[in-house]
Length: 245
Image (cartoon, rainbow, N blue to C red; front, side):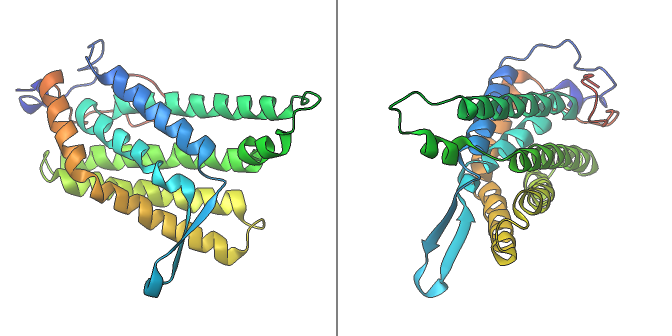
C-alpha cells in the first residue's frame, strides 16, 4: 500500500525519493513532444469522409496528445511537483530544438546541394510559430497537470477516467486557443484557423478518451511498482519553482 493512501502527503514527502521508471517516463514525454512539435504543426492534412464531408486537421495532432497522456500519468502517480519538472524539461527541449532548427536552416548550403528549399519548408518555422508553440505548450501542460491534481484530491482518488479526460479537455483547450490564433492569425484565412483549431481540439481530446484503457493500465502498474500514489494536498502549485513540494 502506498504511503499516500495512509496519510495525507506533506510538503516534501517524496523529496529525495528515487523512482525506478520516472526518468524513463520523462524521456518518453520529451521525445514525443519534440517530434510532434518539430515535424507536425506546419502541415494541414485533409481526409475525405464521403457523405460526412472533408475532415481538415493539423498533422501534428496525431502524436501531440501522447504528451498529455504522459503528463496525466506523471501527475497521477508522482504528483504535480514531479510533473512540473518534466514540463520544464520539455520546455527547455523545445527551446533547444527550435534554436537548432533555426541555426541549421540559416547555415549557407554547400554548392551543389539542392535541398535547401525543402529543408526551409520542413524546419524553417517562423519566430511567431515557435513563440506560439512554446507559450501554448507551457500553459496547456501546466493547466492539465493542475486540474488533474486538484480533481484527484477532490474525488479522493476515485473516477480516474473523469480526471484524465477532464484535465485534458481543459489543457488542450488552453493549448489550442493560444497556439493557432497566435501562430496563424492573419497568415491563414480566418475560417481555416478556426476549422483547424476546433478539429484539432476534438481530435486531441478524442485521442485521450480512446487511449484511456492503456493509460489506466500504465497508471495502475506504475503505482504498484513504484509504491507511489501521490495526492497533492499540500503542494505548492507555483509553476516557476522546481521544489518537490
